[in-house]
Image 1 (cartoon, rainbow, N blue to C red):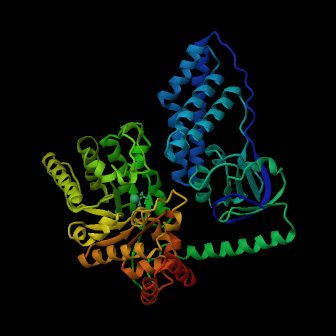
Image 2 (image 1 turned 135 degrees about the vertical axis):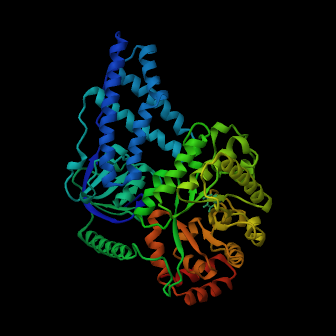
Image 3 (image 1 turned 180 degrees about the vertical axis):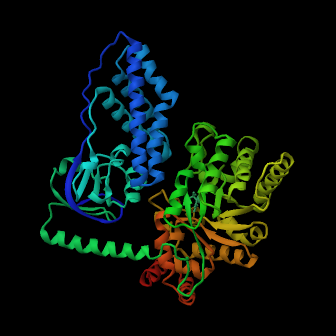
Length: 569
Ligand code: PEP
Ligand code: MG
């Protein structure tokens, strides 16, 4: 048995087809007619753009809008003057053929991107690898393999899946995907999940371990892979597959249904997104709105502070796509583990206790915060936008933000620019301080959203990235549970919405407790919507409260976890 990262759930049983990039054996040559070489490059880029747009169209149908955007991103990268001019300059300065110039320029940018700390920019390095290979193929006149012609019951095995490969996928014919690299958040994983193809990633040497035609059974949840297994193992996986598909069909029953407990207590079930390209996916997965739009990705995805207008467009797109459903947009949450290299901020000794999120924004009002808040207010004319302030620790921060918002409102009124005059301003409850003054904050905030990812870390004083203290990082700790209950009670008492956008909102073990505490809104990843709705439907409020009372009487994390596991539905 081989074990990879289970990156897209489901059971695959099929025959191996290895996807190998063709060897690109071009010769690096010295050229004399630079203009002719640049013309060859321009023609190749034109063909690339044409082909990629066609692939993106196809991808929209097979994987959805968000995924086709990845390919449109390739078109933008190829057309980005920084990249195309660098290739041309190599032809000019080094008198090399276009193939060599493409390779050197793409490798150069890929190296820079791969050194970035954030995953999104690192991902661009692999995008550039894909762009490079395809551009060189076009220059060499090498035909691309027709992946869409793969027979039924294929298990694709590749070093990594490039977006242009997956664009050719016919999901009905694909039983699974195995790769040598990639994690849960890589493009391969995201695309496989949206196409509902089981995937096990990061299995070293898998392209050399298997050969074409080998029989493979795999579990995309656990990452288990068996190559040419005995008949009994195949039978076992067939049973597992039936069970998986039956459960999935059961979840489909919850599409279009209200999100409620077994006895009809209705809550809101919304989604977390990282950019406008994920907004359509919320509706596709039956989310009832957006509970957290992490705007830092707009900033991380750019090499300078995004302008007010470009932010306005992004927020407006999300508001319009959600067609009047609530959209909570969190203002810039930078710092801590999320760096923005172009701001050139000094390294801190304790970044998680440092200059981040609202603390940073309130020190950079004119160049960063006011433009963002102005963009948000302008976009609020196009849907139901709510503004959320991250990492609040004292009421002064909330007041300061509200004051800037009031100033912008006055300015917009003066200029006759439309916005939602009743726009709600809420607080992200993710620090121990915020939790302890939840009553004070509730009197001045329009809503709360609990960020359990940070709240757990700050409450337990445990960095989740540090394996030595990871055992402390658990929402089931009595300290964290008390904190969550306190925040929800304060919101309930003040009559404002209590939401949660941390990972705990989708945890089937936590859901009954959160219902019992009185949580009004659950914000989860789009792929968890139906699962969360199904879990809620299995508990009456009385049963949930009974379980919560028992859990809150326990003294250790292990006891709480054991109780919740024993009662899991
Ligand atoms: C959280 O802290 O729970 C949260 C949702 O925010 P982030 O994960 O972006 O810090
Ligand atoms: Mg947070």
